Length: 280
Length: 287
Image (tube, rainbow over all chains, first blue to last red; front, top):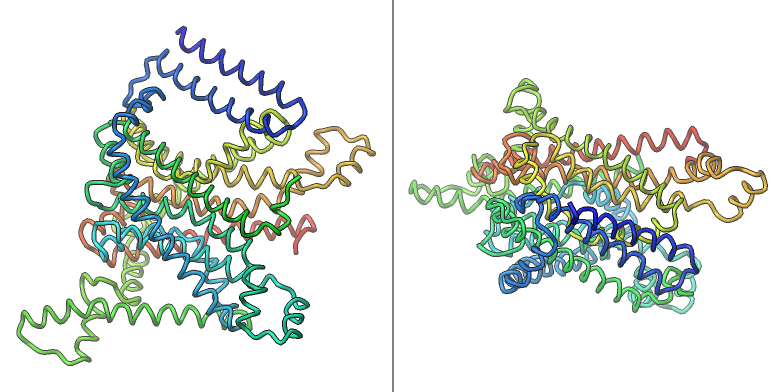
């Protein structure tokens, strides 16, 4: 019981500290400290409740047990990461993005096509495309190629819709200016319309990062070689080894956040001129 | 009419590509079968065969349509062979989860807007959680709840709720903060209380944002319900149809479940869009 009371006390203390910190002037340090404190206090609360109430590890392992498991099984986690993220998600992401932008450029060339592609693309982007996983496993086999194929289809539509929308973002005046410079289609595209579309394209790229990882993991539930994050999660769940499952989830969370962060970083470099990137 | 012609053209194009794909991908099987039976087929015979195989690599659109018609219209909705039955199982979990997630999300958003400590502590985590492949935990939730004796609708609904929760929080917070300083100042000159400010200004202003995120959330919660049906080898629901189809190589069944899920998603997003238009029109905010 002492564990539970202690943990709740720590959590309440951290919360009180956060209330006090939030009342002060908003500095960068506080903006980082407050959420970090909140997250840490949640971990302490979790640990305390699991230990204090003796929650069996088949229901909820303690954070310390998960951390231990991560340290012990680093080689397995790394192998799964390579299989699912580097081979499945990343290659699918690159192919899907390339295909989405290419089709968007084709659709953009004609007003008729654009008006047809946009509603269909929007509709497709809202569908549970993840369901094609069993079909792709059937077509491309159990290895990472089928996961990459699922990812390609999943990221294709958000990229397509955002790129087509972004290419329409320049106004008449800007395009007329390019015409007065005697710029043809290609210079206009490269120097005016693609740069102007970049904030939209990056929006699609960021949405697609999560979709890529989800697609690669869920596709492994439908069959996979004996490695990969989705495979490990589904088999270890079957053996009720939940600390291993949580270890995979931590890896997935880190990989997902790092992937998103990397795209966001490139975005600030590429679209530094956009109002949303302005600081201070 | 001017708006539907381009869309119909694209749809026709996709259907055409689908037929072409069915012909290309099923051809090899037709040829193999013919070689085994030691007969030679003309191109026309091959074409006919690729359009009517039992377990094609890619079923032709009309095969899926026939399967859909058989399992939706020709079977009683309570039968296990009816797609309506499976669709309803998934739909009920989706709607229950969506309701839980949307209500919880709105409540958290109100808390975040009105409490600065909560804003600074929770909001970064809510945003960061968007970058995490949350669906990875679905099997664990199902199995853990199963081991403590909870099964059926609730575990799936919880996954759906979790997936629809964060889009609603993020959208609603943005919406509640949409009124600008001028409008807030005007309310202050009226000596309005905090709760009046909430009910008369912030809440109405947040509705367009709320509806936009509800559309994302309901599509996400359908995905959650479908994935929630995979890990326990469930026998009911659209996800179970997908899984069973992939075990037994029943491609036509997979495709019909897929189309069923797509129609379900389309209907639900459409229903929210309809609600959005009605509500915004009544409030005089329709575009």
